[in-house]
Length: 152
Image (tube, one colour):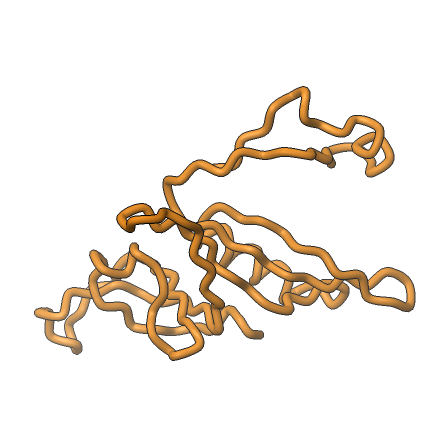
């Protein structure tokens, strides 16, 4: 979760950006789960502008990438997971590059594949080594991958 503090808003810049957009010089990141830094290119007239978006969950990340893939003026360039390492001598933020995002279905490995019931939708993030990324993966059921969301 991202939290903002009223007196840390930059109201002059926020007014220039237009309705619904606010600019902050400080936000608070709760240490509850991973965040995702999405490097984007946005087409403005004849040039591409670069910006980084901070998202607070893997489903939000997947939806963002699906939306971006449907808009020719937006391009996701790279994604990095930002996660907190607290169980170490010196707690710190860990950065992990996300190479692929897949949508699939969880399933029970004990079920017969021919009679398998449809499971819950799952988002799987893979690192540069092709292995799943994130603490959440440790407790999940296996996932049958269906659709690659990133790169698109």
